[in-house]
Image (cartoon, rainbow, N blue to C red; front, side, top):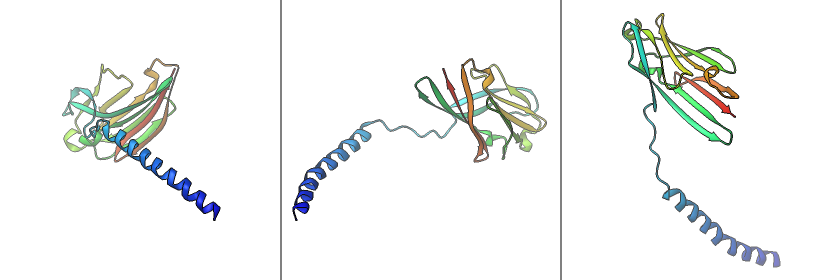
Length: 164
């Protein structure tokens, strides 16, 4: 019986603290501004056309998660504008390449992204295909490596990290 009384007293003290903590945490989350969902790519790479019909830009969803001494990057190429599928064809710790067969309206495209602010992302159009590449050898950093690569929702998906 003594244990039940102690448990009731402890529960009576603890319950309001849990409720107060939950209310404070909820109020804190609600007071932060709501972030807008990103529906369109947040980076555009311009396509320099050599011949044929090419898209003017290639969109990338690029997200960066910084941490002390570096950052983790996630990039998804929006290839769905000009191709229905993508396939991982080559990769190592610092380079990855995907190929996407072009739809008929872009099959004549010959061109590439050039002179970009982000030279480690590259798309090249040739032979009725688009080649999306992430090349970390073009980054001047002590440590950079590709940690994950796949095709997600028919789009190239790459996660990579950089550190000092």
